[in-house]
Image 1: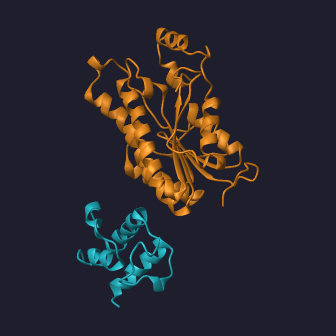
Image 2: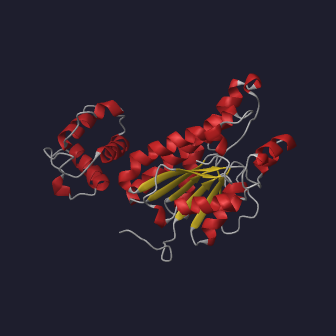
Image 3: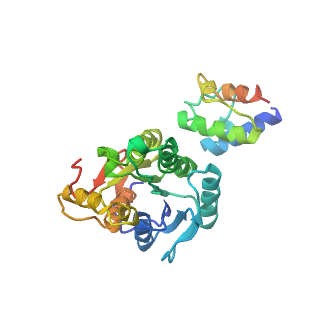
Length: 244
Length: 76
């Protein structure tokens, strides 16, 4: 059955990784406000301002931790139907000064972490013949960024991961898409120097930073009942920074 | 029918969502409307049920219930 209206949209079980702040928290709140059952994971297992959200401790670099977290969500809320893979870290530095560990750690958290969580959740979606996966990439994954080779590589990798998942599970009515945020007002951006920040803003046609809610809105759309025929796409939400 | 086949059948009925009497040795996965994803899912369930390990490449050429059952049984 194909639902064409969002008015009678069923309540879904949503998991947002890295959902304790920034884009993840804004996204979790949006799903919650829309009547969905929402779990967020955080490395620390704690989060501020998460009324109505199930907060679960999870380290996405550890498969057992991922399994335990998703099992806990399944027991409390049911099988995950919408996965927003958002957990991510940065360890910025110019390539010449970037250690192998700096590179590998960021890949492990941002890219392999996305794989681990998707792998754990997709089986349930497949069984249910309904699922939505949205991976939070970044505009730097598409365009590169000096000082962020590791982060940009991990975010570019999510595109290949999402598109492969899209192809593997399309027949099961499970979609996988990518949102590529531009500069968004979050803690992660606060780590940039003033110069980096100004340079970034100068390149944004919209002339301003984005708000976490504006990313959440794009994610919510890709995860909606209405977006069932959209899969394997990359949606930049960046004030016109990348234009594509 | 052997005990093992009964266990196999239970997994197949569960994963493929088909009637029990359709799980006969000669049945092809195609005739059961099972595609490659179903086959992988079935094998994962069988790995758990029988505590065996089946590699992806071993699934090549497995097209029937008998083929899948023999593959699992050969590992017991």
